[in-house]
Length: 531
Picture: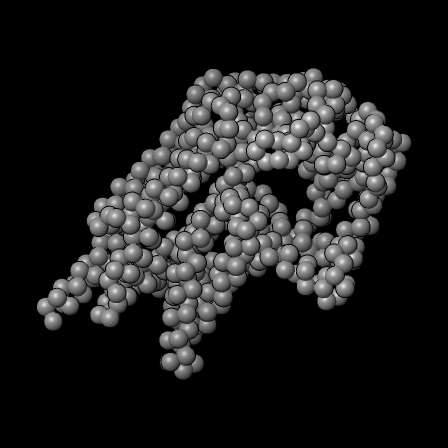
């Protein structure tokens, strides 16, 4: 490759990495934590679990449905979701919409969404389910920055540029990829960071390519659907889904009320017919209507990531659909495989731990890439010092702001009262506000080495505090909590302690590098002032 072409490609790689770095860092940090979101969900509500454990195993879906139907005017036009109690979560969870007599004063909607944690035996309401959504919130930060569909597409575009940066990085280092694979020079400060960036980037290349590709599929899938619908199926989205194997029958409402009974019996029947599966959730289409359909959605344990479901009409308990016949559908099976690869849930905790380490290592690659770009630009006399200082401070504030914001959110999830109104809204505010404040403060701080050192250490202390916040639960409920719950607590606490240690260790390293960059900037400024 010609030197000029290589130089242009290197500059493109650096600029793309710099532009997407801030969002990409949030995506990988939040994604690494989200690998253990089920454990994090248990960790958040452990006090509530302790208060209601142990509980009877005689779960009655019919009793719960009857009580909900009695207490709420469930909207038949919206899907009714139901999650069975598990050892790590002894509550039945229900998500549905209720009809409103008058439009909602703020949204103008004619319905209101409900999310409840229920006693699986009596159907009594334990607490609002949406008050314990920190794990889900971190997961949303990973794929849409917590801002909905716009954020979903935005992250998808960032992922596309990440894929381009990966390819350009491979081309740049191709000739020395194997020759310098184990090279890590401790003597020179610049080379040490460069070697770490290249070494981790090379070792994690399969991981990065997998995440770039699967992320593109999830975040920009609407683009593919629209293209297929317009070009191959004359604009018919229904035909696209039909060809893809999503051919579940749809039954219209009868507008005749009927009690939701017979679920206990159908549960046993569904588990027998689906075979070796893990039930993910149940759905009821047209809740309370004569044409209600009960859906059991599960994941096959003897097939790689295949999603299966079976459907029954509650009126006569007739099976109207089962996905066994769709195992040979390449698109459906492919999407399920991609999902398992992305979430790392196909090989137990060992794979998740490996993905967690690689995710944090990727965040390190992103940071070193930015610092090397800043250091290189600082030595160029024509470089605007004002813009360089802005990028330097934004790098410190945004990266560290992300770390401390998630840590403060975790602490808030543990210390805020369970019955606090708009509890999750308060946690959202704490996370976004702390990220914003840290970033803005960094833009006005001239002493970046000290700022990085102190804020990183503060982040480490907050993560450690989040882990220690579970100590009262251990002492009060340790004797009644199941082993599964205790394992979840240990996993999350160990994860937070690990991140806390990395923050504390990085404080010295990050501050040292930033100090070197600042010295380079000061040197150039001094040369400019004397010339």
